[in-house]
Image (cartoon, rainbow, N blue to C red; front, side, top):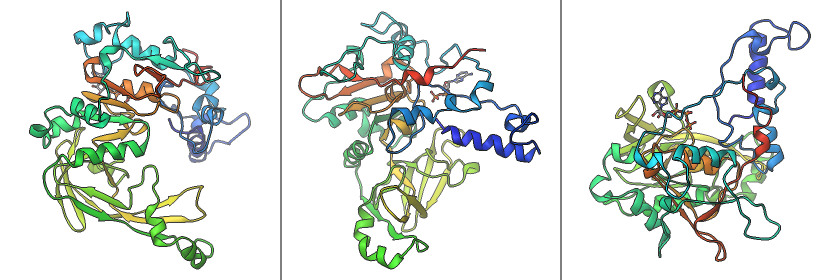
Length: 379
Ligand SMILES: Nc1ncnc2c1ncn2[C@@H]1O[C@H](COP(=O)(O)OP(=O)(O)OP(=O)(O)O)[C@@H](O)[C@H]1O
């Protein structure tokens, strides 16, 4: 979800455009224009780094001074789910798959606590949705989700319909590395050129304190790493909007057909630009992070392999097969709901859960900030 500050800024901008005062009796929200918002409060809330539950909920649109003026309309039918047998009755739950997803998102499923003085937010995942870890959990889940991979690994239909989703980027990298070594052919490495933005205060001092090797080692959410390893016929995801009118948006998935010295060529997978051939250049990404007193300039291809992706990144996707890999439980509101609600049917959803020894592997945490739902009144 977008932070409420962004919506408030749009409202003020519209007022300026329409010559409407920002306060007083003549003030009108969004300059008097009718604005339609779409959203689901069961999904992830604004991501605010180093923040806790209170700041996260406080960033949501329901905490905005705009909210009392919203008229809320509720959708009643889940259009993503198909009418297959496995959706009609989720074995072991006494409810259908659509009802189970809603109950999970609302925080209405029965919960347990496994340790004293810890939140009681562990829910049981139905046996029918589980895969067991075996000796190598990544191998177990990728074999299940990417079945018949040897024959199908070059098919856009096959690749665009499936993904492994997991809470953290570190595990996404493990999944992608595992899949990459299964692809035949030469692996090409692309290294970024990293520097500190020159208008940073005292650039010379920073250059001595933070040598290039250190800058290369930095990893950030949504920013390509210093080293990217790719092969032809692997799927990648764009990490920046390069050209939205041509389908090159943050999150677009592309199947690589050529790895050049200075360009990557591929075909878009899915959406209205499906199969379109596109060329991706290196770009300079400016990265600001509270942990560092400088702005990093990284020149790199804005892409990442996407056999696996974070749960947050998967929001908005509709897939045929999803493996939810939880080597650790989710850590924020809505993540489990987003992960479970990417598929069209229960038959396409599998969980692989690794818990500490004394917690059974059919239980996982479902974090729901119930206060994010309050004050949502139907029209
Ligand atoms: N009017 C419709 N008729 C048929 N199918 C639909 C319709 N609307 C949506 N769908 C199906 O539901 C899927 C999800 O739709 P869409 O991505 O618009 O929903 P969303 O609310 O943005 O989903 P989410 O936020 O959960 O990702 C689509 O891929 C499509 O298969």
